[in-house]
Length: 313
Image 1 (cartoon, rainbow, N blue to C red):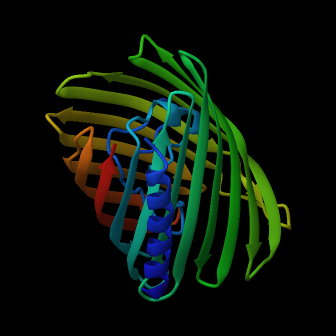
Image 2: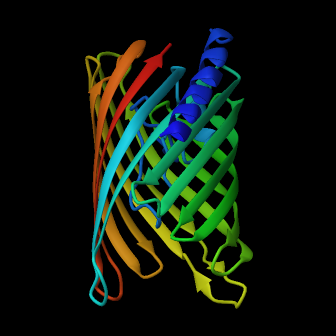
């Protein structure tokens, strides 16, 4: 908890400095939710806070500017066919900002999640910079980094992304991002690996008055990594459907993520509800439920809750 407190203080310090100097991660267009985490399955996926979108180019359509922070709590239960069942509790914090101007946009987020038994510890930092190349076209550069320790194994990852996002009639959006993820694993077996990452999405966003609607479908695929012995692992595909609506500053958002990572298939349902005005203080509640099963018929269930506070300006 001391590390959590120090990280939160540092993140707030950076956010406040940037706010003084200025006037939910998606591929085609950013989410309405000012700040909202995504955990899925700790140890299988990398957490994020959606302040920096999946596609760095989509960052440019993410006005207004905002900073936000929140706290995560999660519970994992795994029924093991051959072995001992696993129960694990997690808690964490996240903080970040998004600064949007007519010419460029910048977002940074930091997430820190660990388990109560000390078996899992994740520290994640994501950043995205986008530029307006034309009235309808944004281009972006993203850098995602993570340090995750799980049961004696330590994974250090860096992902460099290039992205484009096209706005058609200011309602329809097409997003594409691609890059490479570099992995440095130490622990039981040490090796380095890299793989290709691709993201594509189609989105619809409408409404400038009291009612706003956002619909999106996007796919994130990652080629497999390879161990020092030449064994492939972590072949990954995630498909996401997003439905969001804001009516007079009341936000109701839902997403469904279907994932297939190695021999694990599962579905996560995410819900965000709260108060999210275009300007001013926002308060959101976040709920996740995940069910996954692997080839050995081991079943994993994860329940996640979070509270977010954000200020949009």
